[in-house]
Length: 180
Length: 231
Image 1 (cartoon, helix red, strand yellow):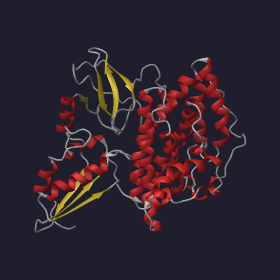
Image 2 (cartoon, chains in turn red, yellow; image 1 turned 90 degrees about the horizontal axis):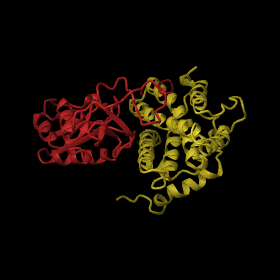
Image 3 (tube, chains in turn yellow, brown; image 1 turned 90 degrees about the vertical axis):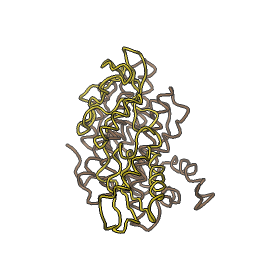
């Protein structure tokens, strides 16, 4: 659709569409909304979203929720999925990172252009066996007590984007949003 | 030496390999040794399924059919997945070594595809898969290390898996693959078999093991019993 790229009304509506699996984050916080265009008469809107993980079951729900939210205010809504460039946690907003932290999920640490996967208790492959993209990916600290002393319990968690970690100071397990 | 773009598998081989292996891993659900492992295998299966769907959608668009037609309404002879992806799970050691072999293959395939394809949608699938596969490879490598360099029992099971799977490396092995896998096997105190040993290579012609038919019978039965159903 040609038209204006400002679409302030649509952006405001999208700010209230939560991620279905981590509802503390909006789709804007996640950084999956790549473009929003409004027709010149303001009656139609088109949105481009980029999925987070290849098989993430939330993707279809998100597309549905985005459509429902926009249909309250537009006559026609077009939601398209665009795969390239692939989503990265670098697109997550600073506000989103803060919200994750407050929710008890450690936000991704640093930038994803070089992913390092860190210590896994007792069975971490030596660095020379890991491909370039994966050396140490580790949270900055415990989202509850702030201690930097944390260890990985499992590299895969309750959703594709998370790993399970534990704080060795306060002993609480917590989710880490993997750098991706 | 890393593979070149001429050595990339066809998109059909890649899509079918991801789809079939995803189904195999899903057979572990609720049966894995620990709950964390159930979660890990489920996550890996889901990533592979998403990668397969991304490619099948592109292939379907070109052929004028949906991804479901390609996944559910082709016969075994029409699948082009590497044979190793369809082999039964065996024990946990067998599953993890098979996973290492496939992850080590994809560790070269996905970046090369992302860098060379002219199709932006295929590039998107590949770019995403590069990172997902990095986590898969870490997982399978770590288990091969733990079990190979573990107890007498686990070492024995890994050795048995190696004997069983080595003849199925032919469709996925490059020099880079051999180097990558040999590094893990050595670290795991496992023997590194001869890279020139005989190997199976028949999937490109549609010749599969007897196991693919059984797998498809289960995977495709619902869609074939209720064609076009939606829920």
